Length: 335
Image (tube, rainbow, N blue to C red; front, side):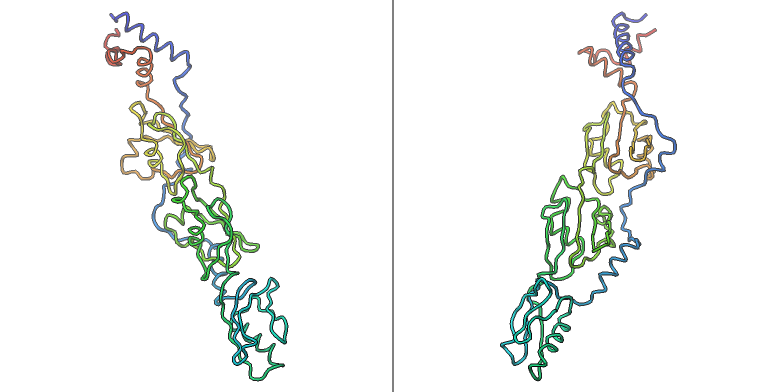
């Protein structure tokens, strides 16, 4: 015959469970949900995206530096010091020479600019020979805007790559802990190229595209790059999404399951795809890498408590001496 106090404890537990309707609402898994998830690929891969290759080809067309507005150039006319000196190319792309007046040198190479000056001076001087060199590359700039430490113009002497610009702008994740780079846009006149920075920062150097003068790099807001780990974990809450984060990465950052966590009924929910994938941790710990799927923005990991812990938890809340009345002991006195 069951002890009266034990019966009272069980009755209270059942009453509380029935009053709440359910201890916690565990979502149902979606059929074939695994199709919506992929395994993180941390290996180095090279992209064949046609748009990326087109940008690279476009950059390679420029084999020599072209003079532009704001550049300081040193003009040396041999034997004619009065015609020589440093000049800054004006916003109209022109310089001013004695006797001749203004001469356009915009988008010319150094050799082409020297030949243009020779042609302009030849009606007034015999045996003219001119050389041109660049003193300061003031027009060689890339503009970076968006969620970076130092937006604005970045000047360079040699054509930079995308990673060079991101580093100069202070946009790398290590410099801003709250900032996660996932993508950026490169705007070149009427063209826009979106770069997957997650792949670039995990070793896909084929996405480190070379940039041209007047390219605009835009880093969008990354406040939505979060994942949520809820339920029976040691540190539930919001996690910052990192490149190639996997299910186990997220679960580990949340401190793992508590002793009450149901290891056989973990749910990975992707609201953006309206799917719910049920994961058994015991299967995941086996050599089945396809279960350790990649985490995306907005994913939710939910770890429910298992049935025994539900009752055990209620007993502890009711009776401060609940160590005397474990589930096994209560079960032993029930007829």
